[in-house]
Amino acid sequence: MATVPTTPKSRGASSQPATRPRRRDDTRLALLFILPATIGLVVFYFWPLVRGIGLSFTSWDLLTSAEFVGLDNYRRMIDDPVFWNAVRVTLLYVVINIGVQTVVALVIAVLMQRLSNSTVLRSVVLAPYLVSNVVAALVFLWILDYQLGIGNQALEWLGTDRIPFLTDETWVIPTIALINVWRHMGYTALLLFAGLQTIPHTMYEAARVDGASELRMFFRITLPLLRPILGLVLIISVIGSFQVFDTVSVTTNGGPVDSSRVLQLYIYDNAFGQFDFGYASALSVALLLILIAVTFLQYRATRAGQTDLN
Amino acid sequence: MANPTAPAEHHAETAAVDAAPPGTPPPGTPPARRRRLSPGRIFAWVVLVALLLITIFPFYWMLRTALSSNDALYANSSSPLPVDFSWGGFERVFGLQSTEEAIAQGGSGASIDFWRYLMNSVVVATCITVCQVFFSAMAAYAFSRLRWRGRDLVFSLFLLSLMVPMIFTLLPNFVLVRELGLIDSLLGIMLPSLFMTPFAIFFLRQFFMNISTEVEEAVLIDGAGKIRVFFNLIIPMSAGPIATISILTYITAWNDYLWPLMVSYTDESRVLTVALGTFKSQAPQTGPDWAGLMAATLVAALPMIILFMAFARRIVNSIGFSGIK
Image 1 (cartoon, each protein chain N blue to C red):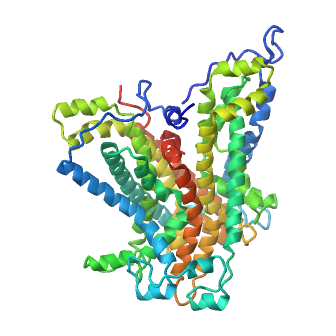
Image 2 (image 1 turned 135 degrees about the vertical axis):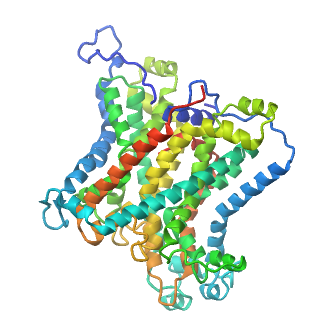
Image 3 (image 1 turned 90 degrees about the horizontal axis):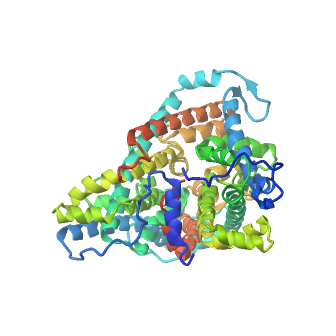
């Protein structure tokens, strides 16, 4: 990570020689300056982490006091078909969402790199990212409405049957995944576009002199050199993707049956529907472990952060 | 700092990603390319334009639906222009119609007070942005320009907090906010985001580190203290990056849904995103009030669209690797 200017560490406040300017040690001032941020860090990041793990070993409905139940919540989780269904549905969502999003974003980024550097173009591409998930969800709920949606109308014009996008068990997850692709593809494309800017243009010129086609240049230059950045972008997007909630909550609220009940929604249901905070916390721990495992595997697989450019 | 955005992009990029090799040329304008329109180029443009249309279309459809009258939508759902043009959707959103009128036009008739939600959203997003950016800037200053023992250690603790996913802190934070008696209050919604985000600290620290020490020495020799250096030198010289991070923070706070949904129960603290969800679930028996719903989504999205139009260049350029959250 970023380098910190080297500071002689042995120098303490009390051992300051009188000749040195007083400003060489700023401990007191520094403590004052980091105080608010440190409160935020300890109270709203580290403490919840500890507490969340602690709560997962209890049975608690918020009203009475929490009762320690050991591993009961975890045992219950292993036997809970809705939990396993939520894991399956979430994984399916992540695979479709990330798969499509990455390909589309890469296409947009490369096309922009080869065609135009225009800020206007990039602004348009980013526009969906500015509206909330809720807005995106509502708009597509309307566009994909079975009876009145323009999307289904278009399918009819194309001569195919209407599709119950958000009310059919097989369609619902792919549909939600694609709605979120719409919202995030431009943002991801801009991240990749910034990555593409680090590839020296001389490489393309040399390749062109050798008579390489655009397609060949993409596979021989762009893709290999973008790999470390693509890896990082993937890790970030996958972590975000696993936490999907807003879109599902607004469009289907988990239905039909449990076919779109993703993990985060199941956690929310348990906490605020059943007031079962212990079990909800255990589910959160499970999701955290899944996230850690997936991130670790991805980091290894993509060798994210290691460049081939030198 | 004549052009704050260009260095912004570069520093932030090398800051956040080890991947950027030391010899990387700064992202600049590529050399002039051949402008010959080959079939391949035309095809590429067609693909790009198609993707742009997919991006833009839902926005247009929102507007078109919002300006239609709801009954006409059921009769004519595919006209590219508003059907039976009407401001009714917007009137229902802002409570300008009587209950009977609203029901007659396909609304639910339930009272919704969008001005209130709009105000709540503005208050929440503004307070979060001001406090979070200011406190993060203070910390970034301590981590970049002050010398003190344990600095690297404390900084690495902040680094560690980047790894804690939001999702995991939500439930315990809810419990905490409840214990503080802040459920269903705007302060409860803001509180966890008021103090800092690790990302803002890293982002600002990069810029603060790159301000020349000579300028700082000169100010210090004039007898100013480090606090004055922070307010009179560091902050004005980093106006560009501070604006960038503020805009990004504002957008994030404005669009947040799950946390406000957990904390707010009544109109007292309901923000726009949550209100939209409620509005949707109040659909009348006859079918949803699509015109009203789309008018509401437009109202919710509009402030961000205006903000974006005003700062498009800055926002777009700031999304390099700095954009990775």
